Length: 482
Image 1 (cartoon, rainbow, N blue to C red):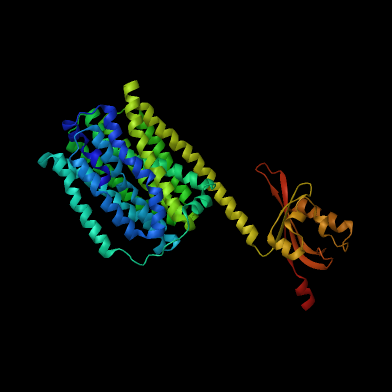
Image 2 (cartoon, rainbow, N blue to C red; image 1 turned 90 degrees about the vertical axis):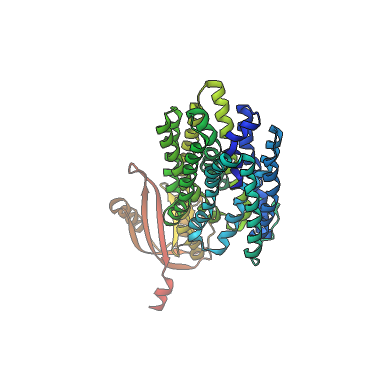
């Protein structure tokens, strides 16, 4: 709620404090800076100190900027107060770091989505503070939040979990464990787009609607509040969908939605179509936010604090640049088309990356299936050169993967079969598409054993054989028992 105090009251603040459009955009965007970067240490220390202590510390720190803004009289005052006000946005890392400890993985998307409904506080501020400012002045509208901060600090002290499971790893060790993982940076980009769009629209819509469509501040606040409510309530839906279905497929639809909405907004439509485009962005990014935070604990359960902080920080930074970009583009070109088109292009890039990650995930699953199967598997190219084997191959034959790859299946020949046997085998593969039968092979230690072998060709999309796959079981023991 306190994170968006300045942006929601900007039309009233400018009546008392002279600000240029550029200064107003900077003041509006400044809370996002600390709200972004502070998410990394806050996420990390949540793992070490627990959510209860971190929430209490954050709520008490926020008392200073809220009071300072209420007595601000200059651009510099707003910058200082707004910077520290960013702690309000940084607290998001506390919940998404602690909550997964209490629930199984298959519920993490929905649980983090429920927690993220707390973002509706930005809607309450955006909708309610202009109404209070109309009646009592914007300074008093700000001071009301002092009582809320003190109240929730006391409630957290009394009701917070004092026995939360804590982690003791150093920040350096955790960063070393994740920074080279490409998945981390892809998730950062996705959250940069989804949550960044949410923050950006939340921050610039009140002033944007007043300046470009001549709406009064209360009307602009109500419209912004509706955007926030829609995007926020859809976060648990996004998390639930990611729990039930493949998260990458959900993100594909999300980024296509953002891309199309950005194109619509870039044509500088009237208020009706601008509303449609903005709400479409809200729907897409709301679902996207919930989906991304299903993936974070899934891939980084052991480094949840630092990774949640990094991903959250990138999301916050995604909300810092658009308001400044919108103002700069407007000053240069007279309209905002290029800025909204950039949103569309970023979404399209993310869409392509999601497709890549989806297929990488499928390949990873297939690889695990191959490596985990009890049958020995040997893959050769069309010339008979071994390209890959699984652990069961090593267990049965005694040859390691390094010894087998680059060799040929002759490595296993026992000398028990003549050339006609192998000729008929490959003739069957050619004519029937497979060969299945019993064969005598030799282990690395020279022992002859019986195996039940199936050979099948792997063809590309045009029907050309590229590889052969041999799958076999050791049936020597069965032979001996019979």
